[in-house]
Amino acid sequence: MCVKIYFERTGGFAGIKTSASLDTDTLPPNESEQLCNMCDNMNFFNLPSKLESKSGAADLFHYKITIESKDGKHTVETTDMSMTPEFENFVNFLSDKALKK
Amino acid sequence: MLGIVPPHLLREIVNRGDAGLKKWAINTITLSEQVRMQRQTFVDTMVSVSEQKERRIYDAKNKSTLPGVLVRVEGGSSVNDPAADEAYDGAGWTYDLYKNVYGRNSVDDKGLTLDSSVHFSEKYDNAFWNGAQMVYGDGDGKIFNRFTKAIDVIGHELTHGVTQYTAKLEYQDQSGALNEHISDVFGSIVKQYSLKQNAKQADWLIGQGLFTPKIHGVALRSMKAPGTAYDDPLIGKDPQPATMSDYNDTTEDNGGVHINSGIPNHAFYLIAADIGGYSWEKSGMIWYKTLDLLAKNSDFEDMAACTFEAAGNLFGNNSSEQESVRKGWNGVGITIKK
Image (cartoon, rainbow over the protein chains, first blue to last red):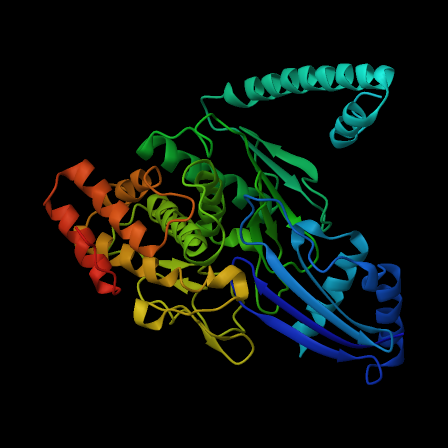
């Protein structure tokens, strides 16, 4: 179902930017399936574009994720304090990929 | 029903409901308000009574649900977990600095308990202040070690709480960079205070020891020489400017709050070095008193003017300390118009 994923993490205490571009067609089949399941489980295309965190917080990571598929393109921006557990799993997977590039 | 029907719905019922429903909604709102006020009074009493430091350390067990399991309370012995013990000790040094040097009783000046959660999430490369407590990750082991390893990180995070209760600087663009800057200043001061170092002896580094040996870098930021803390093929080069001529106009990172903070950071270093002695005494006091002079949308020029005013209030107009403040800001390309 999902095809291309663009991941960007900015901010945080260190302020170091990391990013990753993934294409499910070129990933190993097991990872591709895992990623597609994660996208489906969190209903990515129906999430609001911005998930705001509460005021007073500082040094949170800022995540920007764009997914392009045959159904269209959608971008979600969020922080550490405004994620569902499903979304967090997805972010951890992508952060790990960004680290290994 | 109390507490289940949301307030906005109750207000709608007041506006649109029949007479019976209207009466019920008004009674419910009134009762909710009374309960809320009683609860708030209870909470205020609970958090304001302490005149001593109160620390609580939680283990998030590599989940992101806060605060996690309570592992150490005030006066408790070491728990044989470096992250938990460092969070406890670092919060203690930070509390002591604010109390002993600036007369401030915790982040809210009312004895707020200092809550910290360690082992947050998995391989989490970060530490943050969530508006109520500190949160520390273990690091991924490839780039970062655990974030409690550097005491200035702990001082930095707690100072976000102090700023939240004082200057309330908006976390965006220059006011956001000042928010970061103030946390770096007092983070570095906490480290210097714990090591009894004067301005000359201090390393003026933020996050020294956080990088693993695989990374070419000494720390995350340098107040003495912004832009020189790291240069590595995996994470790039330290992007911090030292002067206004290299100001980075960006939309990322809330408008570069962790980048442009290099400019006021360097000004503070220049001022502390020029005044000399222990930085928590004169230069730290100037910065602490400045917190009450800033507005939530203050920019770098406002900060310079407020530190100049604070130096005048503390040491007299035309004093050598006030002149050091003027010279320090000049050194980063900001002229005080007074």
